[in-house]
Amino acid sequence: MTQQNRHIQFPLDDNILYFNHAAVSPWPLYTAEAIKQFTDQNLHSGSKNYPQWLEKEQQMRELLRWLINAESADDIALLKNTSEGLSVIAYGLDWSAGDNVVIPAGEFPSNRIVWESLRQYGVETREVDIYSSQDPEQALADTMDDNTRLLSVSAVQYSSGFRLDLAKLGEQCRRHDVLLAVDAIQQLGALEFDQQAIQADFIVADGHKWMMAPEGLALFYCKPTVRPQLNLKQYGWRMIEDPTNFLQQDWAVADTAQRFECGSPNMLAIFALHASISLIKQIGKQSIEQSVLAHTGRINDYILNNKSYELLINTDPGRRSGITNFRHRALASDALFKQLTDQGIQCAQRGQGIRLSPHFYHQPWEFERLFEILDAV
Image (cartoon, rainbow, N blue to C red; front, side):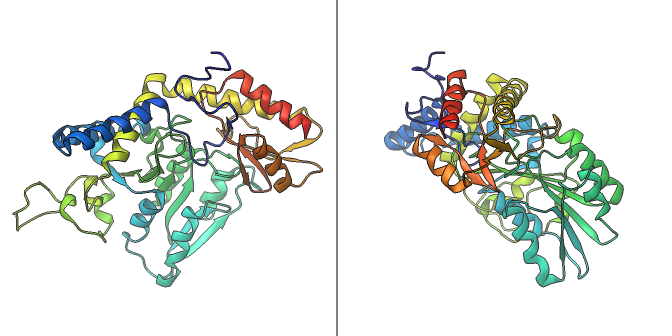
């Protein structure tokens, strides 16, 4: 692939180097075309093809099932975002004064504020420093006690890119009879995920980062044995059995995860996310993971071999992800961030440094250009 053509699915402007998929991803051409197709249908025939749209929705649930390796698409609901999914959990469970929730320290606010809000019910949020321990998973487990109801973790930490051993955490939670919730937004679409190995009770993730889709639609997985534990706080026509029977009086809540979807679906976002995950499936989860890790590895090697910079991540192979973070040894990170963005590098200022998050499609010349700019700083 030439520099001029870049990757055919990502025809970004020539003056942009996009290393910010951990924030908001550009859409692939495949997804943009799906959105145009849906727009044209609405423009010219309205909802005439609604039955086909519903089929697309069911196909997307199956794609999401494939993406996380869940047992059934019936265990997947479509919500607005990660925060809504975590709120469904937090305000669906029955809490007692003295209960506690364990989370890693430094979590993205979505996975902290919702649990802290439960203090009104006498629920404690316990934060664990996972970076100072030789065994972060054990440190989280050691913080649990008989009053711990839930462990909620990000699969990959948003700032440092630190990757937790979710299967080990799943085993610890089963041993302690503690529920496990995973915010997988920084993993799905970049790194392989195996729900059947992890045995998480809940998985939540927006589609606008590594899944390369628009904001406004998120995966919410709920293990079927746990679903009855979540009290419903929202009710509407779509969360019942036989939802298109509008005249039924003796309605019953859906047995599937659709019980968490109270109203009409976001069909535009469904078309888009369907296209994006279809592209991921065509390329292959393993192939994408290999490319993503190779790309962050290349950046890490450059930083480690450049005396002007300091790497701020754990380079252990089992902890690496699609996120890397670094800082300049002499220049403040806000000044470095401005220099990089002024030259077209899409990145983020997170933690104490600059976060870069390349996806599978990046070409060698993009890294060469990135390193030239960093050298010039």
